[in-house]
Length: 421
Image 1 (cartoon, rainbow, N blue to C red):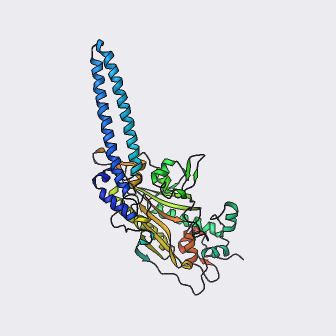
Image 2 (image 1 turned 45 degrees about the horizontal axis):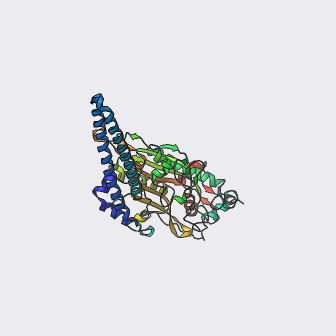
C-alpha cells in the first residue's frame, strides 16, 4: 500500500508513476476522493463520540427527576454514534480498496514502458563460443541422465520434471553454495512454509493482476507460494522491529510453485519455465533511507554468484510497466543461454520500499519513540533455472560438462559430469 500522506501531498508524483507503469491514472483520483470521504466520516464519528462522552457526564450529574428524559436522549445519541461509526468503517474500507489498486510509486530513474524498455546497466564476462554445435540444456541433461521430463509429465503433468543423479546433486550443490554466500554476508537462514494465509499473500502484493498464476487450496483457504519472499515478508507482520543494529537479513530456502497461467506455449522445453522449483531467496528489512544502498548490495551478491560460476550475464534496470505492483525498482540479472542466443533471467532483486510493510503493519521505532513502516527488499541468490545456463555454458563436445570450480567441493570434488552410456 502506498503512503496516504504522499497521496494527499504529492498526487502528481503518483500519477507520473502510474503513467510510467502503464496503469490507470484514474486510480489516483479515485483514491483521493475516497480519502476525503474517509477523513470526513472519521471526523463526523469522532465529533459525535465526543458529544456522547460529554452528554454522558451531564446525565450522570443531572437531578434524578431529569434522568429519564436525558437517558432517552442519550440512547438516541448512541444510535447516531453507531451509525456514524458504521459509515466511517465503510468509508475506510472503500479507501483501502481504492488505494490498493495503485502500484508502489517508482523510484526516480526507473525507465518507463513495458518489458522491452529495460535499460542495460552492464554486461559482464565473455560470451561462450564452441567449435562444435552446442546442445541445449535438456539434451545435455538427458545425456547425463540428470533431467527426466517425460516421467515428470507422467507423474504430475506438463512442466514437471525429475532431477536425478548428478542433476539432483548439482541443484543441491548450487543451493548450498548460495547458502554459504548468504551466511558469509550475514544472512540468517530460514526454511520457510510454502503455504500461507490470504492476508499474507495479499500483503505482499501478489494477489493483483497475476493472481491467476498462484495455486490456491480453497478447502484450506491457503495459497502455495511462488517464492519464499511471501513467507519472509509475513515473518514480521504486525511487529515493531529494532533496526538500531542494522538491517535484518534473511535467506529463505523453499520449494516454489507457479501455475504459469499467462505463459502458455512459452519455454515449454526443459526446465526454464516450470510449475515447481527450488530457490534461495534473500529478504531484508531496513530503514527506508537505507533501502537503495541495500538494493545495490543484493545485486552485488547475485553478481558474485554468477561470476564464480563462470557465466556471461548482464544486469538490467527493469521498466516500470514490467514491475510487480509492490516493486518500486527491480534489477534483473540475465545469463547468456548459448542455444537460445539470448540472455535469460536467472535472478531479480526488488526494492519494495514501504509498500509491503504498510500492508503487513511491520514498523520500527523512529526518533521520538514513534513508529514508522520499514522498507523491504528481496532478491534470488540461486534457483533451479541456473542449471540451464551452467550446463549450456560449460558443455563439451562429447556431451560432458565441466563443473565450475566453485561447485566442486559440494560435489565431492567432481570435476566433470559425464554422459551415461
